Length: 264
Image 1 (tube, helix red, strand yellow):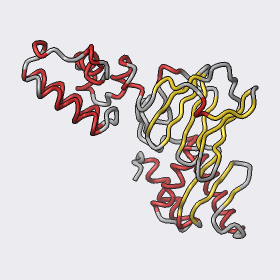
Image 2 (cartoon, rainbow, N blue to C red; image 1 turned 60 degrees about the vertical axis):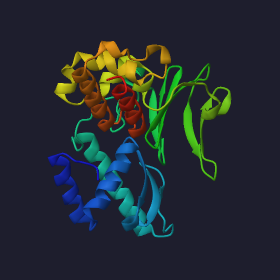
Image 3 (cartoon, rainbow, N blue to C red; image 1 turned 180 degrees about the vertical axis):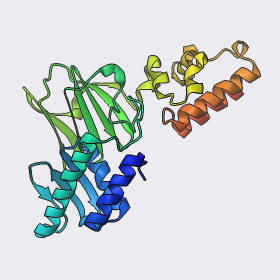
Image 4 (tube, rainbow, N blue to C red; image 1 turned 135 degrees about the horizontal axis):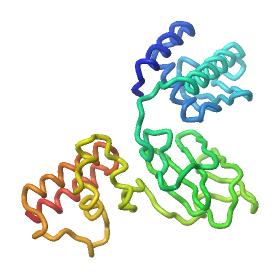
């Protein structure tokens, strides 16, 4: 379950008591509203009729589509949660550029002109770039000469993210990919953005060694004479920290660890 600050925890408990909902249900809705930037939410909460959508000042849809009382409850709840999010620190601070952050996109892209989410997909629009996060994977696209004015997700068996530009509706899949997965896998100067502990951030070897290890370019393979056994173990430990922070997958970590151990 999503971790909350003490303030957030107390606010959720109060709302849970007033609305007659479980603590978990309120947290689920809080996260949904937060993911929608405080203006919309897509949720799947059994206590609130299952799947539904909410838009601030707009239409509220719930699983029991003719239950106006439930719609009013969801609308009031989401409006209250949006106000809480705007005026309180309810989630622990997560470094920008990581998936758990509201600023989940690569930080070198700057500030987006617009952001949003649809189901399990989030997007952020930048000059000449579109960042998309789906199921924990971030992909950055080159928007070429398109001037994006809106993004929508087509529902159906083959969901695809599309956007509106001066040239009409364009599928995101038609755009060139700049980077995939996590930006630190391909942009070495972003690697240390995932360091959340002081010990890791203070180690200069993280900035120099980790990018070389994570690259797929065989020309940058580690030279066995460069590192002692202790240095190699330190590198593996730092890779493990990057894996725990979400910068590496388990498969990538195991691959790099095996390559390092073979060089001892």
